[in-house]
Image (cartoon, rainbow, N blue to C red; front, side):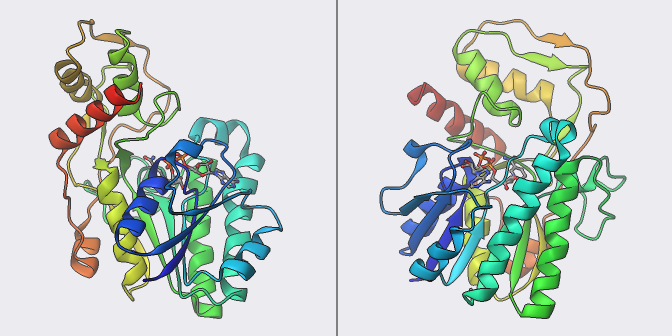
Length: 307
Ligand SMILES: NC(=O)c1ccc[n+]([C@@H]2O[C@H](COP(=O)([O-])OP(=O)(O)OC[C@H]3O[C@@H](n4cnc5c(N)ncnc54)[C@H](O)[C@@H]3O)[C@@H](O)[C@H]2O)c1
């Protein structure tokens, strides 16, 4: 049994990680300010602190709970908002992360695993699926923040001997994703289709992403915490799916009778994103457990039962 502090543990991905850790017999402490997270996502076996990761009071939690490991998921992930408010983005995602890292060093945490991003770091990459050594050149404050955290992780590991793994997620989907948020086309479309509303497809709908099921992402976190290896790892399927494909599959699964409606493309929207996950397969033995059609079914089922 290990003792893990999970930041953002009331959120979509964080709460699925908490469940996986608890199922695995570990003890979990959750830190979350509930800005987008929800109390109903919280596993009752986890100890919960409603606090912001920027708060100085975070130190008291480290002092009291003495976590062996930290899994850092707390962040805002609104790319458009980060463009409008880069200082707010940096305060939440960089300064907040530094507060966590400083405490990891001070309280001798054995390893930290941090949620990073594939799509926002690589942008419209020329190599698809994109490997970790592809030049990271983000074009949003959100992507810049996530990449900065990876540089800080490298620094803290070299200078303070804090082992880390940064997991560069593809587009994560599955149970508990917010259907009202900006991110998550699958959640947004499912939410609308189940209400009989028409989702809007930007442009021709041929833009592709790599969709990875949240349970597989949770498993990647558990493996990364327990493994001694350090560095940045993609977590994706290597399969590209277009928005049109998602729409058509979800119409079938939900039985909705709506028309396919396209509106103007978003200026500068990334055309393709797909991650090469060979490194995490080789080093951690991770592989896709839930394929896309299975994952969509599980997601629609969850949304039907949690309307
Ligand atoms: N969803 C995706 O497709 C995706 C892709 C790449 C990376 N990520 C990363 O995964 C992580 C989890 O994302 P998610 O999809 O579960 O989103 P989410 O919004 O459901 O989860 C984020 C959680 O962090 C909490 N939080 C935010 N700011 C905080 C702060 N300042 N202090 C304390 N808690 C705070 C929120 O309340 C929420 O519970 C994030 O770091 C995100 O950047 C997500």
